[in-house]
Length: 195
Image 1 (cartoon, rainbow, N blue to C red):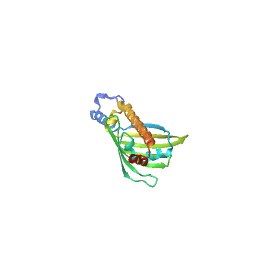
Image 2: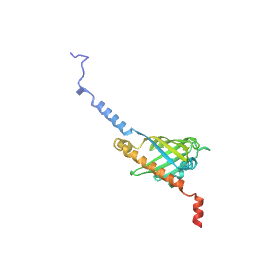
Image 3: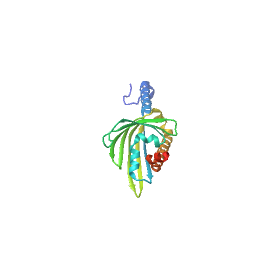
Image 4: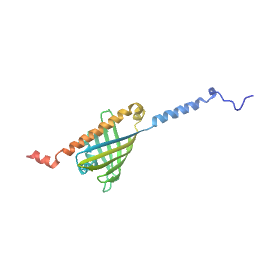
C-alpha cells in the first residue's frame, strides 16, 4: 500500500517537462534585451542659439560629428519639428554599426528636445540646454535597450565596451561641435577664398 503523502522520486519526473523548461529558458535568453542609460554633458563657450541650431539640424551631423555615417529624413514634423522622424546610422571604434529611427516627441525651443528611438536601439533620448556666463551646457540622456541578438548575448561581458564605445562617439560629437562653433561663417569663408 502506498502513502499518498509520500514524496515522489525525481527519477519518475517527465523528461519532456525538463526539456520544455530548458527550451523556454534558452528562448528567454535569446530574446532578452539589455537596458542602457547614459548621460553626457558638454560645456561649450558659446551662446545656446548656435548650439541649438547645430543639434536640431540633424541631417548635417555627418558633416561635423565623426561616427554619424548618415541621417535621412523620413518625415517632416510640425512647425517646431515635433513628429519629425530620421533614420540614423552610427559607427564608432568597435566593428559594428547601429541603425535606428528617432521620432521627435517634444520640443521646447532652446531648452529641450525629446525623441523616441525604434530599431536596433529602442527607447528615449533627450537633450537639455542651459546658458550661464557665456557657457552653454548641453546634456544628453539616452535610455535604450538593444535589439540586436548578438549584442544582448554578449552584454554580460561586452557591456563595458559598449559603454566605452558610446562615450567615444559622444566625445567625437563634442569635438566636432566645438570645431563647428569656432569655424568662420560659410559666407566669410567663401568670400575669403575668392580674394
